[in-house]
Structure formats: structure tokens, C-alpha cells
Length: 190
Image (cartoon, rainbow, N blue to C red; front, side, top):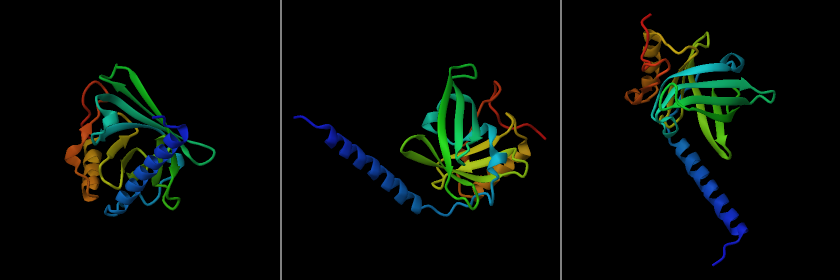
């Protein structure tokens, strides 16, 4: 039996639309997730070190994870994620993506695409006044990251961000602390 290209294309398009519809329907069932009241995207740009994250298949056995954000002329954000596989000296993995602002009122809700047409939420839940630390999550509360401009974070800041995540309904016992400097990053005393 021969299947023509048009049939394959229609079936593929139907599958993509079905997955998108299910994802959209699931999003509506989540409890409201407050975000940062306003994010200055220019100040948010640059390099961020991952301090902690929830388990993600794409982050399994990774070390030294960083994200670099660059504002484009069209208002979108170029995303470059890097990490080393297996150890801090392992093979460097990169992932390039594009983020667009989904809520221009706050600039705190973005949608990120690494493989078109699939988008993921990137909600900035908290960022300090100096743009040195951030808490990023998704409405389902299945993904969460603590980011810092430096590879180390003081214990008080880590505790405050963890407490904020708990208040927002995240199960912070799921945190995996990212090794940035040859040892597992927990926190440094103030």
C-alpha cells in the first residue's frame, strides 16, 4: 500500500494541532501563577548561571549550565543555552532558541521556541531589583529554575527564592543543584 506525501503532511499537521490543543487545554486548568510585576528586558539580557532546576530530560547529566539572552531589533530574544555533558569538562552542548513576549504589560511571560512549531512557557516569577537573581517557572509548576549572574549564590538569597517558589505552589524538594565549579552548588554563606 502506497501512502502519498499529501496524506503524510495532513496526518502530521493533525498530530501537531492535536498536541497543541491538548497543551492549551491543560494550561487553562492550572491555578493562577503570579509573575514579576515588571521585567526590564534590557536589564534581563546577558549571561545567567543555573543554580538549581527541576529534573528535565534535556538536562540529564549536565554541568556548568548557563543561559545567554540577547534582545533582537524586532523585540524578540535570542536564547543560547550551554552545558557540559557528563562533567564540567565534558562535551559542550548548545541549544539555540527564540523567545517572544507573551504579556507586554509585565514582560514577565515569554514563550520560547527551540524547535518550531513547539513553544514553551518561560515565566519570570521573581527578579531582584539589581537583576542579579531570578526565579523562572511554568504555569503547570512542573519546571522551575533559580538563575544567578554569578556561579555562586549566597545562602539567604537561595532560601528566599526557594521560599517564594514554595509560596507559588512549587515542590522545591525536586530541586537539583547545578554543579558550576567542580562541586555541587548549594550556596555560599553571606
